[in-house]
Length: 481
Image 1 (cartoon, rainbow, N blue to C red):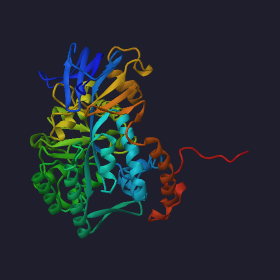
Image 2 (cartoon, helix red, strand yellow; image 1 turned 180 degrees about the horizontal axis):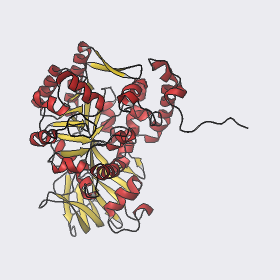
Image 3 (tube, rainbow, N blue to C red; image 1 turned 135 degrees about the vertical axis):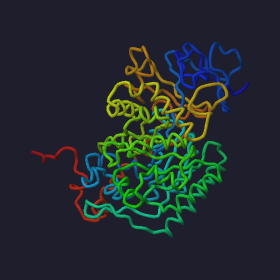
C-alpha cells in the first residue's frame, strides 16, 4: 500500500493557478499527497491511498512562508518593553532596551521551541530564523518537522546608547570576523543536513554594524554557495541618519554601490527609504533600485507598529515592482496576525482601502516569500510541489458564517481556526500544539528564564535604572487593604 493520504471533498482548497500565477479557490475538491509532495489537486481522486481525511468543513491553505524571525532572547522579551522607547531615537526601543535581556545558553532551546510552536500554530511551514548559532539550533529545528533556514548573524559593531540620547557603535573587527567564520560553518552544516528540510542564509546582522568589506565578503560567500543573503537595512531612522552621516546615502543606495542588491538579497524591514515621510530626502528613487535589482523585502509590521512606525506602503512597493515578503520578526510569532496587521497598516499608510487586498496579503505571505528564497516548490498547493499546508476549521465560531473563508481567517479567526499543519506530508501541528516538540515543557521553562532576565535588567543597564523604571507594569499595583 503506497504511503499516500487523501483529503476527501475539501470544502475549498486555496490552489495555485498557473494561468494567473496566483491563488484561487477550488471548491469541493480532493487533495492527495505523500512525503514527496502533492500528487493530485482537483476532482475525485481514484488512486490508491493509505489514509483518508474528511475535508468536509475544511479549507486547505498553502503553508505560509516567514522570511524573517528571531529566536534567541526574543520570546523572553514578551510583556516587558511594549510601552517603552528612546525619545531621541524616534521612539525606537530596540537599541536601548533589547541589549538588557540576558538569556543563558541552556535556555535557548526552550525559547526556540516556543517560537517554533507559535509559528506552526499560525500556519507557518517555512521560516528564516536569524539568531546566534548554538549547539541545539539545527537539531531542534529538524526535530520540529518544520522547513527552516538558519541565518546566523554576525557583525563588527555593537550598539551602545549613551544616556538615552545618542546611539554609538563599539567596533571589534576581529570578533566580527570570528563570528563570520562560525556563521559560514553553520550555513554549510544546515545545507548538508540529512533531514533535507534545513537550509542556510548568510546574514550580516545590520547594514550599519558591518564594514563595507565584510558586507561584500559576505555576499561573495553567499553567492559562491548559491544561498540567499539577508541584512537588516532601512529598519530605523537612527540607522538611516547614521548612513547619511557616513556615506551620504540611504541603505538601499549604499548597498547598491557595494554590489549587494540582487534577487538573492532579502532586506529586513526596509521601511526608511528615500521616499518615506520621516526622512529628509525628497526623492523617490529607492523603490526603482529595489525593483530593478530584484531585491526582496522582509516586511514585519507588528514589531514596528508597536513603536509607531509603518512601511509606506505595501501596495506602493508592490506596484513599483518590489517583491514584498512577510516575516514576524519577534513575538507574538503569529503569521496570521502579522498578515492582518500588514493589510490594515497598508490601508492606513496608503490612505485607501484599495492599497492592498486580502488576496495581495496572502500572496505576500506565500508566493513572495518563496520567491525571496529562490523556490517555486513551496507557498502553493499544486501537483508536484511540497505538501506543506494547513487545514482550517470552517466550523470554528470565528469562521462563521462562511461566505469568503480567507477573509474570515485573516480578519476574524486567525490561528484559532487552524486545525492542523503539515510539512512534507507529515502532521507537525494538531489540536493547537506542535506534535514533534515539547511546547508545553518549553513554555514552563520560559517563565523561569524570563524571571531570571527580569532580575538582571538593572545590572545590565548602563545607567543602573530600577526595574520599575525600565519595565513598568501596564497598571499600578495596589497594596492589599
